Structures are given as structure tokens and as C-alpha cells.
Length: 116
Image (cartoon, rainbow, N blue to C red):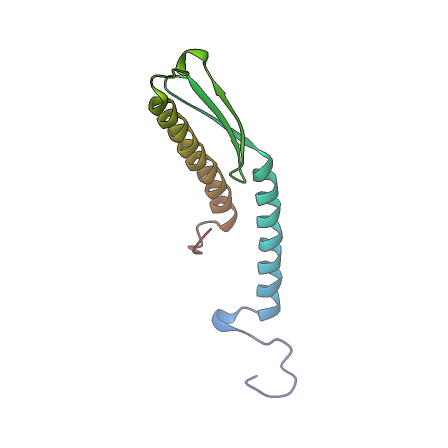
């Protein structure tokens, strides 16, 4: 019934009830928050320089630890150590972001929502 009295369901675009859509969005938002919280606690481990630099970073992109092999600490070549640390941090960030993106993609089912 178009616009008449007694129409029990209000349909949105595509025939979906707006209230049902809102409930689905809220459920997805709660699931996203759960995944973000869990992923923030998970730690990704990476190395650079053939294991000379070891880095642990969590899903919230917080560096948990950096371990250096004694032989990589050369006062005459500080630049190499700096480069190895930067490489490890960048790889850690990329892996942590990929972990979060993969979990979010599984949730959204490829809905094409930007930023997820």
C-alpha cells in the first residue's frame, strides 16, 4: 500500500526495512570494535638484517620490543643500524595493518566500504 493507512512496513531503497538495516549496521559496528580490540592485543614479529634486528609490534601499531644482536652495534656504522631499525619498523607496521585489513575484509565480506 503506497502511503496509505495500514502500511505495516516502511520500505527503504531496494525493499529493505530501514530498521532492519540499522540493526545490521549496529551489529557490524560492534563486531568491528571487537575485532579491533582483539587485533590490538596481537603481536607481529619481524626481523631485518638477517635477524640482526628483531621487532615486535601489536595491532594498534605500538612497538612492543626491539632486540639487537650485539654484532650489529658498530659505533663506526651507526647508519646501518638505523636503517635496519627503520626497515623492521616499517615492515612491522605493514604486517600489522595487513592483519587488521584482512580481518575487517572478512567481516565486511567485500562490501567495498572505504577504510575497511
